[in-house]
Amino acid sequence: MHRRKVLTLGLGVGIAAALPGTASASAVDPKELVERSLFHLPEARPASRDALFSALVEARRVFQAAEYSKLGRTLPSLISGSLASQAHDIAARAYVLLAQLAIKNYQGMAWVAAERARAQAELTGNPVVMGEAAHSMGVSLRRSGEYQAAIDHLQEAAGRLG
Image (cartoon, rainbow, N blue to C red; front, side, top):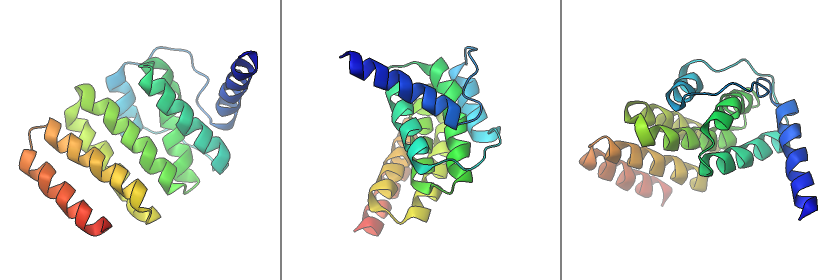
């Protein structure tokens, strides 16, 4: 068990070192996080695929633990880093995560994040990533009361994915 804690701590330090802008300790309002991740991304240099993937895994864990302040310190840099690195699959999945956060309280912005996830997923050509993005858009549409649009979108996506 001690080895896991050491590994987790080391992974967290590695992510913070690899991705710029992740060291701030101030609390972040979830709405501010969504807006910053959509409209005010920090500048980033390309990062290694391993660092980006590790940051995505950590972001998912933090999201599932509802540690939104911590997510606010990492998600914008993860998105900008994956875009700078042209890691479209990681960018798509980071935008899916952002859409999941926005769906909880900010449905008006959820579809924007889901659309960005879809655009990045299309660049991968990976049906799994494309399916995740389509699901995110379907949920965003449904949560905003656009039931028929959600059904149509998901049926269209299923047809494209075969």
